[in-house]
Image (cartoon, rainbow, N blue to C red):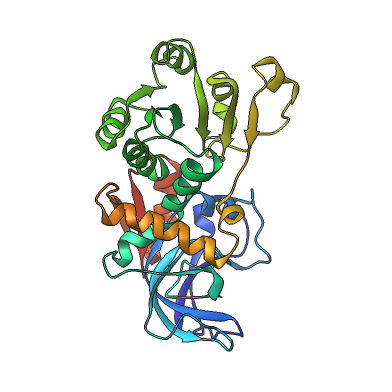
Length: 325
């Protein structure tokens, strides 16, 4: 038998339950991974809470982990039993001792990257990869705005932006998080708890605003973010930590300077096995070079997944959180 976290109805963290299930067997094109570490992400709370719907209930949870291939289905090439692998996309179910998923969602994990590092960084790190290198390909020298700069994605973005020669202005919620963002490489930090974000951006950019603003907060920061984008600039809305952005009036984009808006997701960029591995290799290279340090702020046993999600939603975490089966 194998243990996994599942939920039978949408709700708060209390709906998560630890259950015993048979060890999964791979179908054609699939592999079974024995997880050594599992990533915890905001998107997991969206599925649990009902913002996103799983294919059916009861449902497993989580899409990120790292471990060793335990079984390989018919027709799978490129992976064999015993391979070190990691994943950040694919079907729900990473919160468990085993996860069955299509081989196209796996990447080879170099020996230099630990299972815990991979589980802590795959989804967040490849999110930063597509945000900074593809959605708006930064060349160096730009001044950008990044919300939640002390969180899991933000912590990596601060480091990656610095390595690219980009001035990242991080928006955070406390003096402690402001210091953290700057320590990780942010050029400046704005504490929204007592500073006016738009005013500070105008001051920091000499009134020019930013060619790109990255916003994972959603509803509560939508208007602020639009007001920080330079004319003909891009607002990248890639998360809903405060709730989904709804009722968007496209006319506002014209009024504020012929702005662009995009709502990207990782799966839209890592849409082939080749692109997925290339993105992962870019990320792993940054870690191996020392330009990005993976900071694991919290470790929870798998059985305490609800407690881990509660801390994440309450913004009590720093860096990455992982679950250990």
